Length: 315
Image (cartoon, rainbow, N blue to C red; front, side, top):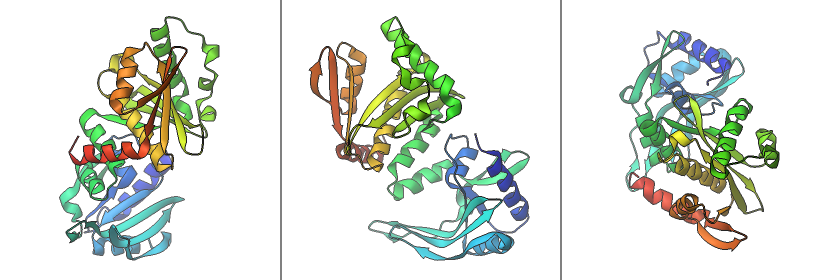
């Protein structure tokens, strides 16, 4: 769900640029959201050619925070500037180029080749296609982004951070799964689900969306400076055996790795054969068994290396 404030600013951008003879498009998180992905939108990114970037700056002269200028890093360079429109941050990129290992700098991106149009609130907005975004992130080595886009294109599946409005549905899904497995349910033994946002404030809690509803959950919480514990893995019964659990667990491990953690651990009932097989296949190794429970651990650096190989193979 895109916040009204972003749609209001998008309308201002659309109105000011609609009749301007330049090629421009919305990219980044808002571009993905406009194409149906559930992602958190924190700013608006606009992509154009060099002339277009300076023209956008001219059309928004009253909103310029950082004038458009040449900016370069090891992996990317462009004409780059920042605006602030109605309190929303807008970043402008022109003549974007990416460094390709062994090939040097690619030619500046021709936005016309990779944009498509989406209809939203009476506007026909140009966006950078998800297929191109996927290829661009792969060139930059952002394999977590590659997987997220591929997941959406193949399964229409989005995995995003929990927000308070998800409380009722996420809790109900987890409790339903527990009751299905155990046959009985004592809600008082699951106090962390009464206020998920607070319970996981120092960790990460994810929800998986498909077909307009929450179909899975997963979370981690830190147990030491270098280790997180994976908890609350659950997939709605009707949506199992579609790879959703694996996608949630992959996203959790990527986020833990990016936050600097080195190891992920978890535990499950030893006789829960399906869960045990799932975690073993994913790459977790059994560390010990206590009172009918199996305990697992996985090195996150090893996980990342496997994922890089898998994504580069197209898997």
